[in-house]
Image (cartoon, rainbow, N blue to C red):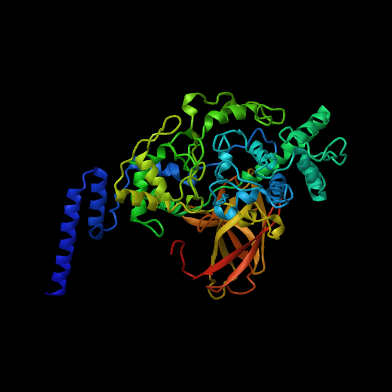
Amino acid sequence: MKRTARVAVTWLAVMVVGLAGFAYFGTDEAKDVAWDNVSKPFVGPPGVIPWSDGERGVLASLSLAALGNAPLDPTNQYDGDPLAIRLGHQLFFDTRFSATGGISCATCHQPARAFTDGLGKGAGIGFSKRNTRTLLGVTHSPWQYWDGRRDTLWAQALTPIEDHNEHGISRTEMVTAFAAEPQYRSAWQEIVGSPLPEFADVNRFPVEASPLGVADAAAAWERMTAFDRQQVNRVFAHLGKFIAAYEAILLPGPDPLEAYLKNVAQGQDEPIAKFGAEAIAGLRLFVGKARCIECHNGPLLTNNEFHNTGVLSAPGELPDRGRVDGVRLVAADPFNCLSLFSDDNTCAELRYRRSGVTTIGATRTPTLRGVTVTAPYMHKGQIATLAEVVDHYDFAEEALVGHNEAKPLRLTPRESRHLIAFLETLTFGMAIDPAWLAPPESGRNRSLISAAGAWARATPPGSTNAAVYLTLSNAGRAAITIADVESEVGVGMFHHTREVEGMAHMDHLDEVELPAGGRVELRPGGMHIMLMRLTAPLVAGERFTLQLYPTDGEAIEVEVEVRGLTWLPGE
């Protein structure tokens, strides 16, 4: 028998056996699985269906380009302050503010894991009660924690300090340790504009005193005068605000989804590198049949609301009451928006918070940005993989407490694979200079400005000028002006090319302004950096550096790649 005939007979036998199995299995689910297994060798990647105009609008709403700038937090007067951001960065990584001297905010919020820790429950001095949430885009949420028990980012930053399972130190220990560091005292003076209070007198400020501490610490707190307690609380609140100023710049950056959405916006619906046909089919399910977008919407892929989705309890634990307890706890928080330590008491979210039976068992919808590195999933890390998450929503069983808002998806196995393929494109990227993701003592220069994709064309014989193109981003919460540029290969300045009566005109620019949380693209035919009087020709394949100088802050160094003389972006 010829080989082709044997292959045909073999596949025919597989089909017959598979179809027999398909007929044998009685449930719809079993038939779906049987048919999926039989048809898999014969079914190629899904076809790409062009997106409708309405669908394009929905997809545009998921792009990071639509994120915009979160308004400055009115409860935190230091939000957006570059000096506060730098001090907050130091505090975030400082392990001295813990009972063991080895725990910092970064212990659980690890930058390499999208500011999570890879554990079911966060581990500091002990184990916390819930999974560590990512900090990506956290400034855009009106609530913090899974149950929303804090209503500002700075109030949340204070909570782990006194938690005996996390940092495990008292309120007076925190402010005393901060005040003992000359560098921190100097930074306080520069940011706040007044000297930091003294906390060295142990008779006035006991080493361990806190209203949340053990009996001895609580008693020591009560023995302090009201004035001294207020001094401690004020400084403590400020430290939370500095940390929050840093956390507010932690925004997600481009990923394969973002690259595909950019193409769709330009009318190009076909697969691209790292976003294939299965991912496109999964995206169609995400915004359609699977209804994921009902909760995971917007550029951060979350509505930041509270939902009960029937996630089973961790083994040996009672069901989590979720938001119903969070509502009570946020109202009682001495550092909430309505407190004396808040810089604004408008507090619409807190005043008009939703409560009642619908909040029983509800937890806050997490962002899906960077979801490939934030496992395990759900509020107590009950689910290990993205495939299991899809299975959970596919069946949507009854909740053990409250009411499960999710409805069974009834996906076919093939559809589940497609949805997983889409989720796997949500890789971890950051929109800020990598130096902000490492401890400040690592020696790396920290700037709120970052540059990407810097390039210049090789110069033709005899040319002494060259243009540099790049994208500049501002991670800060206030506009930054770049006033000068220098390079060892030539004299740098900013130029802008514009067309006048069909002719290209080049204008000199004194400065370039980067909007708060925004970016500016320097590209051919627009703004660019012009290098004059080159010291040597630019040769394709070589690299050189230039320095950008903002009017306020540290300079940044940019590496520029020299491309071919005829190279165009996108090639």
